[in-house]
Image (tube, rainbow, N blue to C red; front, side, top):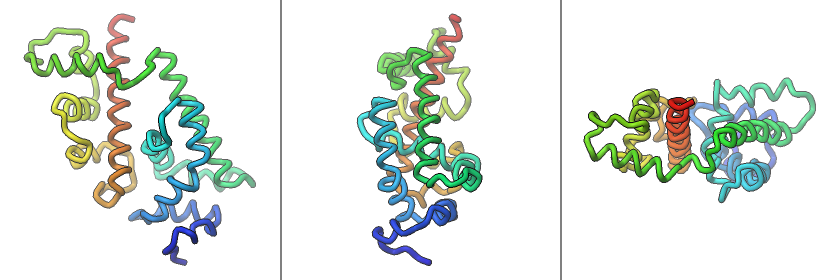
Length: 212
């Protein structure tokens, strides 16, 4: 059965959602409805009450990565979870997931992963002979994995946009869709922005470890 109108998506059963969300290539209108409409209520609660985020869109990229990780393991596991509706099941799984993220961030006393002072220092080092820079920040940067170094260098040091670097960094994204061009631009931007936040978090953690 084909769904060509957003109004029809409300008629999809939970079992059909699980099946159709994992289609390759993705059914983009269906994905849009699922992430922007069907899951909007519990994502809004998580964004506003758990993460103190400005809007739901700020966590959509992370939510997509969470669901699609390991060949959509969370969705595939739904069939084993008894009689709960898909929305109830996903809201609980997502709540636990984002609570773990918040706990990890709070434990590190990082109020904002996008730490402006760190970014400014990184820019300064990059424009003042990084090879000779013997600083706590640059030493930590050198210990990051390849993905995080690429992300920080391209987006912060070089000032490029997420779309400009999508071709280079998408192989590092755990996604069923290997061609980022087949996905909505917003999702690609959100996903790479989340990778940037993770890279900054890893950089801060490396700096802390030097003095722990």
